[in-house]
Length: 258
Image (spheres, one colour):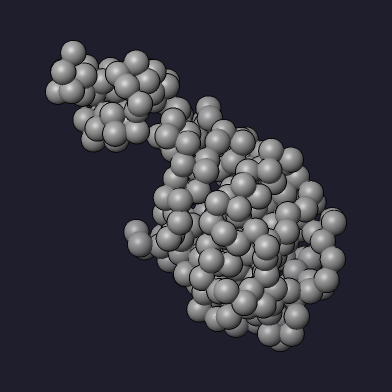
């Protein structure tokens, strides 16, 4: 089978599975495959609606390439907004709650060479993957990873706390694309409640773990800006802002400790 024939066959398989832009994805998988057998194996995985990043084993995010598995959320372009806001000011100590692949923390450390950071997660598999990504990017000497449910095992104070917590309400899970609903860790997607549980814990605990002038920056769902802003205000944070993503949707909320 020629390359063109293989691409047509692969794209047809993806199209039958309702994968968007099947020819483009077939070409990506062709370039990533070691041979035709590997190519069609990857096509079969993608046709099951496994996320492309999991089939490839990586995702390009911000300015680096991150190893991705089914143990963590797939880093998304929308989350780059959080990184950009975080980089508006320098920070010596950074805490990332629910670090997952480490994409947020490690992107910040990569761009701020004087910064050190802690990534916290309750998933041992996620912590292992984040450490691998830190080593791959070259910031492992400045990154520490700990097992913690939000602030439970966190000590000290930080200039910057960031988080992309589970914010999908339980009754919204069935509406997600199969790539997300079937292949990404449910615990990283939903709180099995109203989608705001993590924000209540994070905003309540942040003031004790922020230095004066320190910032809390969280990613949110597009309908949660008002609720999360009010939580920050009630926790005593100031200069609260909501930042939109490239599609104009509310995406990030930031507050400062006075």
